[in-house]
Image 1 (tube, one colour):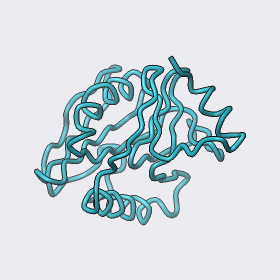
Image 2: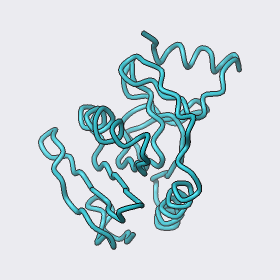
Image 3: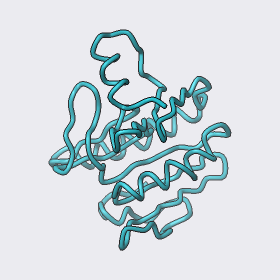
Image 4: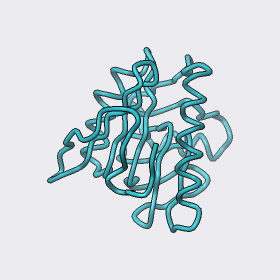
Length: 168
């Protein structure tokens, strides 16, 4: 098993490139496939919408950086929005983001809908968005009583429940 501390230690020495690397349940997961051009465009479009709406707030939107959630879990979501309950530095974000967005691909779907969804729920991420660009569906899971409840499931999406002034 590998620990998040090992990732931080090796990254401080510059001996690892951690782009595409996650530690999930103490196991290294390397996303060597990427999601392709469409995957990247969808991430960029959603990122820009959030970034524009959050310009004058105390919230930050991040794309493809590590979020350290437990001693054995460092995820690298496609997009996350963080506020005052998190700490950001050169290695990533520490604490639970307000929103995490994953754009699924054929090689990430099981992980995004399985382990990562359970992890984000367990760690108190307020909203978890699963974007399926191929089927043009966004599933928004809302945290209620420490459990995710499925909210919106279509495009165009009406609104985020946390940030009601943002339309996708």
